[in-house]
Length: 409
Image (cartoon, rainbow, N blue to C red):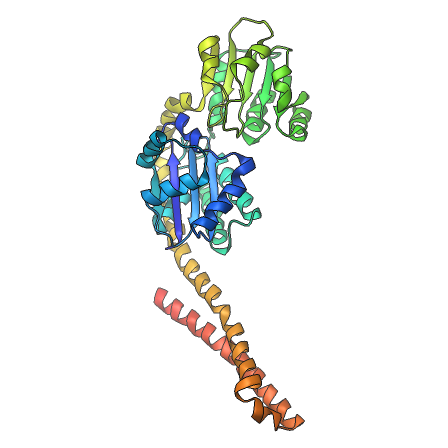
């Protein structure tokens, strides 16, 4: 595990509102990761950002410390000022080797989540990895790690009661929304058509809400969600001109700057003065703080769900022990497999090296002798060389595996 390293900024050490400053816009993500991958000679990397964490998972032999972390974040060019940088560095968690694997497994099993037991985190980790894999940012090492992550998480969710009566940030947000006793024909504006908003819309639809307007940067995705909800679809650009009024705004985008500005909010109100509701599950928040200062708003955000989350942790405490045992077993099982894979990858070079030796022998070292041989002798020589080549390829591979097995037993 000497190559697995993780730089983690989470809700445990850093305020959720501040975490948003570390979020990288999806449009620039691949380019920025490719840049730091090249600059710091990092063979494999993927980036994870959820409502309560920003993490960089790497396969590298680089020494990862706070000095490296500062250079790394600076190189991403996401506009972190010196004051915030100092706060982030004081709150950063750096994991290496087996500790890094343990952290990644715990994260994917929701043991590190704000809401212990939520299954959404596994989907988020997989999506983050797949996105970076498609961009060519990962390789064989992280492929193996992720296979183990998925296996472990599935075992935890299947073999423990940690996700019984599942609670998530989305479900908690809906509970708060439900407490406001809104009428079923309330006008609901959905900003963002990603997984979080899709999930909260399922709750709304299940409880008979039916008046939806969906806004998204990509209109086709807004239309997909609108079709499911029997609502209207708009591009995000049209939000500033929407004047049909609303009762609830539900927003969760990957934007790094506020979507709901005072100017846009004023237009959305369309002259109405009664108290409205905003459910903002984005990190950083999509709502400009000035909106909350100027207008009467029931504001529901991730940070406000902390108290309920603490109660949830207490309810699931006994299941944590079982989950941690499963994680420990998977780590112990995985480490020998990873070593074996390292040997297999290293041994891939053996056939090519032997072929190079054979070619050099025939065309250079013994070229003159071979030239003097008749056709039949050359055929015999070729057969001998073929036989020797196959044996020389198989023998070291078998021996390496035997040594490995004996060492592990």
